[in-house]
Amino acid sequence: MSLLLGTLVLALLGGLGALLLGFAERRYSADDNTVVALINQRLPQTQCAQCGYPGCRPYAEAVAKGEAINKCPPGGAALVQNLANLLGRETVPLDPACGPSHPPRVAVIREAECIGCTLCIAACPVDAIVGAPQLLHSVISADCTGCDLCLEPCPVDCIDMLPVAAQVITPLRLPRIQQDALDLVQYACIHCGLCEPACPRDLAPQALFWHRQEPERLQALNLNNCIECRLCDRVCPSNIPLTAAFQSAKQHQRQLDSQARHASQARARFEQHEQRLSQAQAKIRSRPSKGAAQSLIDALRKDKL
Image 1 (cartoon, rainbow, N blue to C red):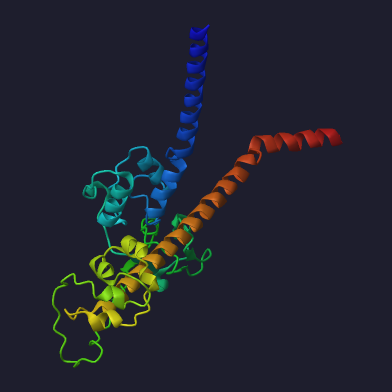
Image 2 (image 1 turned 90 degrees about the horizontal axis):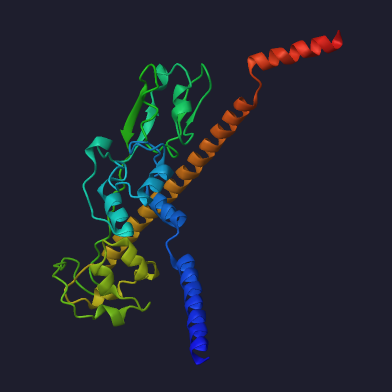
């Protein structure tokens, strides 16, 4: 009897453990859709198809299934490193078969040469070109992703890809408070920690300075809470322009945020573009064929007779 009872108890415990393991697997395992979304968020959303896939989302799905992470020239080496960190893969050079990596560019139509053929409008994946048949076309620079897909179909070769002017970060280099403006000799950080108790926002200026080139780390250290009061500059014995470094890091973060917003807007326009094409194709497929239409007309004529 005791043996039977023990067997039942063990069976119940085993079943309970299996249920818990199954729940944990469903609850905590990596969701494929979530991984695809994280990869897609990191892609530049140019929709250029240089990776061999018809858009950034299909490439993200392929990468989640094991495709190489080095097939996106617009993203460059920075994207490869980002995806490697996300997926735990090895960093590799860009695949030269996918084309060279260019700085950000936008399409510009030489308006005097445009013949209004609308072929570039149909080729643009993010609807950044406006115009009408036999009329002048123009590119909305703010919406252009620089995908180059409008170049090939243009019959008169009137489209140029021009580089986007890079924003130059020029942080202030202010002298320390109550110090001669000419005495700006800077020394290396000696890890004294005097800047931390001087900060009125309870930040860690020393750590912020060390990680000033790491945007994700700066967010965790609450860089945006810095009010640029320059009290950390005042107490630094090495005369390090801490506030200027923080200003530069903030400007860089704003640029990254702007690029992320632009990519998100481009992704939304591409999805709307694809949805509109899908609906148009569905309408075309739903139309009766020429033979079916003629049969319908003949049947109606017979009914009238």
